[in-house]
Amino acid sequence: MDKKIISNRTKGIICIIMSAFGFAVMSAFVKLSGDLPNFQKVFFRNLVAAIIALVLIIKNKGSFVGKKENRKMLILRSVFGTIGVIFNFYAIDKLVLSDANMLNKISPFLVVVFCAIFLKENITMKQIGAIIVAFLGALFIIKPSFDVRVVPYIIGILSAVCAALAYTCVRVLRDKEESYTIVFFFSTFSLISILPAFIAVYESMTLYQFACLILAGVAASLGQFGITLAYKYAPAKEISIFDYSNIIFSALLSIFLFGVYPDQYSVIGYLVIFGAAFYMFMYNKKLDKLSK
Image (cartoon, rainbow, N blue to C red; front, side):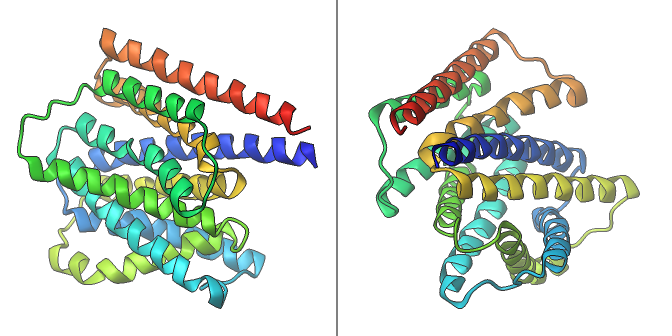
């Protein structure tokens, strides 16, 4: 039984790092796709995820709409998730990419807070401290310059709030629905809800732009499945710190794809985040020993 507890926490960490990588790659492909309407980008992002989840449901003879008693939570997860993605893409489109990413990184902290408030998950001061330190490390890396119009920043913050609420719902559903059912329900809900806007703003694409959006969808699927599984395996307080690895992946992608290199402040930020993540990992190992 003890091995199972340790195994699930480790699986949660692996899944959330996998998710962070997926979303970092998604952002890169969204940026590479060029100047296309946000609803068009969001639509393709969720279309690929819906197809992948559909295949998994058929293969495993799973449910398309989930159990009746879980529908309300599935709908809430989908509503918050859809709004969060739309807001996030808006922020990426209107703000400096580093500013938008920083705002999005508020969500892991909010997940811990929401899970403590709504799910009554215990949280220690050491865990709160580690998350705050990681957040400060993120600020070192992205150096937000809040000197432009305030509305896009408010939208960016709201995207983080919606994402955190969506992931809290995922935590509720962790033992009640399969990951592919949760992803399919959300992706399909999102596709249907934004379809009118997608049709209204649709612009013709080059083959390159189409390929970028499809690959963004594939990467987003990795991110979605990763985050869904992560919060099924372990409480947010124990693994959300590792979501900050997204910033590391984003920095590496910026170097290789866009030729943008980090400065000394960014390097400090990397060290701070890795230090906080390592501390959290060692703290969790201590919890494992105490649970024996």
